[in-house]
Each structure stands twice: as C-alpha cells, then as structure tokens.
Image 1 (cartoon, helix red, strand yellow):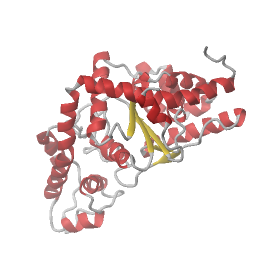
Image 2: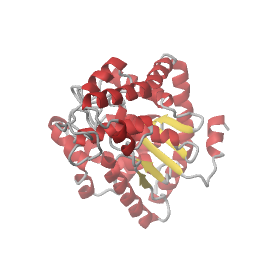
Image 3: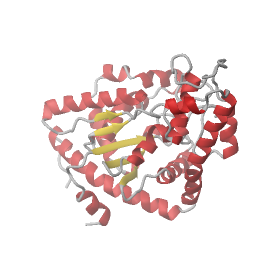
Image 4: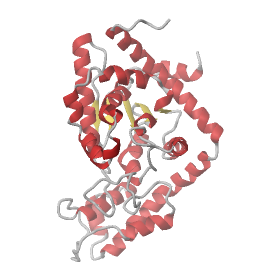
Length: 347
C-alpha cells in the first residue's frame, strides 16, 4: 500500500471530518483568507480536513486554459503558505479525483429541477453572463453536493452566501438515503462568527469578490504593500466625525463595520477594544491602521507563496499525494453508490 493511501486508511475514524473548496477562477482575496482559509488552518488539530481547488466548477464560465492551470497551482501554493500543512490536511485538485464528476452526474438524477432553479447564485450569475447560461451553471450544485458527500464530512465551512448549497446537499442526501438506505452522512454548515463575510472596500454592502473587475474594492493575497495601503486609504466609511465615529454598527455604518471586522481578524482585538483604541481619531488614522495590519498579516503569506510557486516539483508532488489520499476515501463512497443504484461493478 502506498504511504499516502496508508495514512488515509489509518485516520482516526472517530475524528470529525471537515471539507471545503474554492474555485481557482480568480486571485484569492483577503476575504478568501479571513473568511475561510484562516479558519481552515486553525481546524487541523481538531478535524480530519479535506480542501480542494474546485477547477471543474471554474469551467461554468469561459477560462483561458493557461491562466486556469497557473492559478490552480498558485492557489495550491497559497493554501500551504496560509498555514494548511499538507501533512495535517488533505489538499488536492478536484479534477484529479474523477469520482467527483461521476458522482456529480449520479446526483444530478436525484436533484430536482425546481431546486436548482431556486439557487440564488444561478440567478445572479445568469443575469451577469446572459450570453453563457450553460447547463453546468444550472446543475453545478449537484456537483457541489458530490464534492461534499464523497468524503462523508460532518461539517462544511462556508460563507453565508453558500449556506443554500449545503442545504441543497443535505436535501439530496436525505432523498438518496430515503431510497437506498444509509449511504451518505448528512453534513452541517460551519460558519465562523468573525471574518465570515468580508465586504468590498468600495461597496461595503456586497461581498469582496475575486471577480471584481476594477480590483479597487478587493485586496488579493499577492498584492504588494503599497497597493494594499492605497486601497484601504480609499475605502468607503461615512460622514460621521464624532468622538466615537469608529464603532461597530453594520446597519448604519457598513463601511466602518467591515473595516472593524477586518482589523479584528488581523489583530485579535474585539470591537470594544477597537472603538476605544480609535476614540478621538478620524477615519484617516483608522484606515491606515487597518491597512498596516493587513500588510503585516499578508506579508509572510505572499513571500512564502512566491517561494513555493517557483518549486514546481514540490507542487506536483503535493498535488499527486493529495489526489491519492482523497481518491482512497472518495472511491469508497462511490463504490457504495454505484452498487446501490444498480451499476455493474468495474472489473
């Protein structure tokens, strides 16, 4: 038995399983890190964790092939640089584990048209890309369900905007189990309380996005310090100039609340401490402090990512080992599903 597979086989079965993935369809942002990856890294001692580059999902929009390959490997490097130790987490590329695509098709046949048509992201992406409303864009929640259910996870760490997909996954799993017996574990969404939804710096009522066309409202992990400081100095706040203008009030002060959430995630301070720290200060001082905190948080990540990206042999070995570990677990689930639905066993 190969070492990677043996490690997967010897995992403590009593340990809770956690799984998530991010599309390599754009550069990872500060929101990706604070809202997801930072939390993932902190869970390695508590959970058996699977994290993947969701490259198959990226194909729902047109990609430049060379750019997709580059971003996928760079994202793997950034995962490691963000603290995801490959010896403690299973890191892999989605398309390297064919079980994802096969189970995705099978679950398409157990996912209802009405369920898919109600998906908020389908509606939003269809409106933005009216010239490319393809079948994959409509059915990708079934592939997402396969991504999750293959590994029988207890928890799926997601942002609030993705909770709907976990709920659909649970519905599909219940439906399948109702027909064929106890096949899939029913996962729970895991949503961190702090940093769960980092907002755009210029439009703080919408989530910071990799697809921001101007790039001015987002901070990417690989941005240089000067660009980061420039973006925070231009961040939207409000017209309040009172003694305690820096206070957490998401409804009335969304821009300030977003900056406070970022500062809290980078420094470990709570909102009351931040308000006290900047009492009597204007927004200029506050935004500069947030920018500096982000620069220092991302500096080691950027530098380590740059080092790893240059080591192609290491990244290829990391991808191969991760795919072996993931395939061992995924194929056990897939074999059970194939038998339940009546497919002839592969010789």
